[in-house]
Length: 295
Image (cartoon, rainbow, N blue to C red; front, top):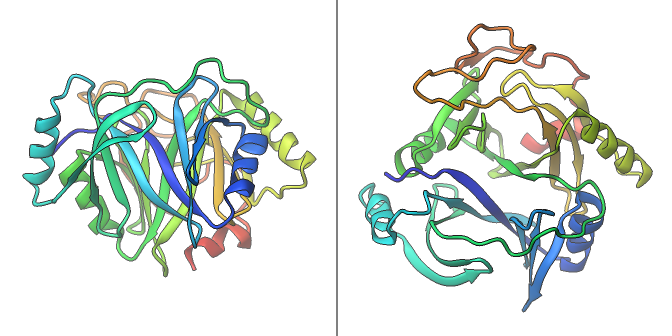
């Protein structure tokens, strides 16, 4: 087993590369850092790579990249992965700012990329649109969440933060309440990608911006129970759900076993648990457009 510390970026295949570049730069508010040979690399205004786009036949999330502690020896990463019976391959200079990584597939076929060393691909990027702080998490629809939770725990060192009954699991690899989620559904696919915003005022600005571009909000604003983040959801031109959120729970000290106290917590302390429906603290119910992602 290895212990990844954070999610770096996600790679998406898209049949219309220019259209997705336009969405991520003009609406989501990322900066186009580089573009070459049918690929585009998009970064936050701080210069952190968040999204990689590649030309493909179908719209899908194909890869997730995670970082371990920067001082970790590359051979130790390989041994930790292969000790769990997972075969991996080395990729040299696969992505700007990352000289070397190891790649392997998770049970649903998404490629997990793991690396130690990374440098920003730009500083003080000029962005338009919403302008998130960072890539926060991704959620996937899978046949059986327990199987995927077990794999990410055993191979990558993830911890379970919360369950909604037995059909939705939230998993963390660092202090953030969740980095990868798995929800039971009919088709194996990405459920949503989520970006962190600065604060509640940034959420309001994002909603006004989406409204000005006639992009429907398909759920929110509201405050979730698991993670307690304030959220809003919309769809991008590839029909993928995009969440913008803020005020996500954090567990800064794993030895305590509970999340840092917040005024809206109903439990004292707020420890990982199994939630029952309904889970939201406040906000409207999800729309059918949101719910169809699990169908």
